[in-house]
Length: 186
Image (cartoon, rainbow, N blue to C red; front, side, top):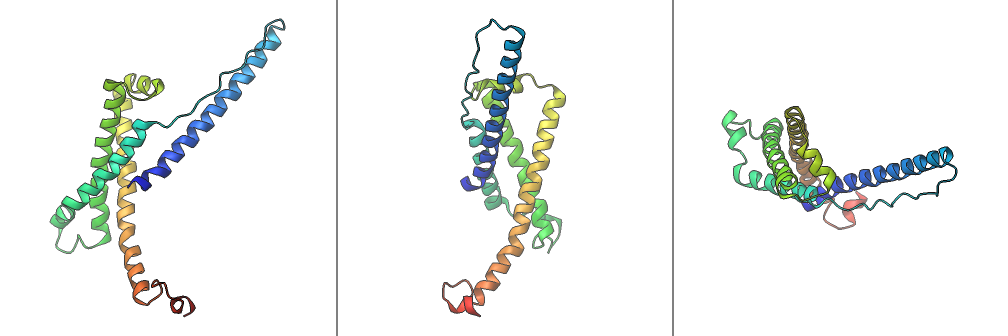
């Protein structure tokens, strides 16, 4: 689960670095423009942007995957199994159930994150200010988007595991994944 949140965090870090580079270049352009307007002023250099890992975001991503694992372990089959007899065994049942688990995990981890920013004061100042200045419309759209994205992520993740795992089992039974050279040559 930790490995699943690493790509998300790397993407966020890359976006922060890209944004800090853009900010640095924008500051350089503004300082050059100021120099042109006031030729007697001393040149000013922009302060270097120091990017750091957002520990609140990282912690909530890991928490989301841990919650999903706990929900799957303890409640797998209760939602989809109650819909119909053989429905749970189908990939659509797994998709729906995992999507519901994903929504629960996303909303709770988003609540943890917002609580850490809003009440506890963790994280950087930008995020705290953004959370504190949200309107009802912003809160609704944030949680709705997070719910839909996580439902899609976890639903597709679990629904894709069924055919892939059965394919791997079939290939393994044929002796192609046993580590011997005969499986490669066939």
